[in-house]
Length: 119
Image 1 (cartoon, one colour):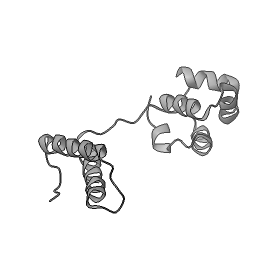
Image 2: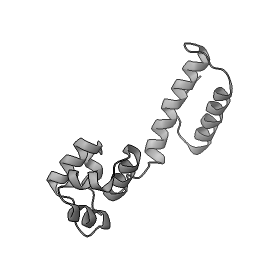
Image 3: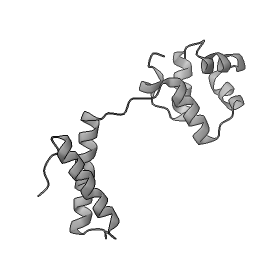
């Protein structure tokens, strides 16, 4: 019977079980697929509480999305409003304005809560 994960030992055992299930050829709508799905949810919740991933800095997020979306610095300049602003932003000399945050959220789909962080 599956139970909530409450400590590191249970977490490790759940990870091991997920690994075992992934080694099988698990078919949809089977007992194993249900177990895999439930364990994944339990593991995710445990990790969110006890092993949270830190959010990237605004500059890391911008660079990452540029790389992911294959956006050039010239295209970023258009989003931010000016070439000199782009250089100042990426070097950390200038902070993002509210208008820039809105455009980056819209164009690069970066969450606002990442962009508004202090850096």
